[in-house]
Image (cartoon, rainbow, N blue to C red):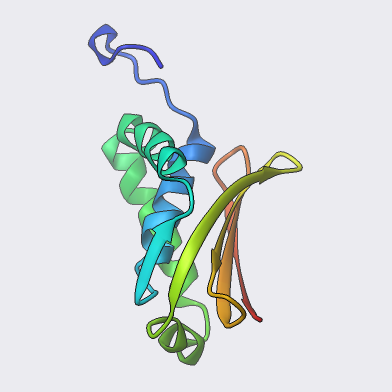
Length: 122
């Protein structure tokens, strides 16, 4: 990454949105931990470089998307512990919140920062 002192921020939008998805998605569980603390820090660095206004815009989009999920499903997540697995597949960045066979969610983040959330059971 380039130095901030040069006045230009250099971040990957997909990774910055990934950090927001990890933090906001994980907050719906009783407890969440990232399977790779190194990857968590890597995502955070991209997020920290993103301009604050863009952070707010994406956080609002993520929140609205999560709130569109069935509230009963979201309530069940609140009693579960999970591990977040972050990985690339077919040009997408994915974050799976795995609970060991119970309710889970997956974020799929595309290169341009757009994303989708997939709730699933088992």
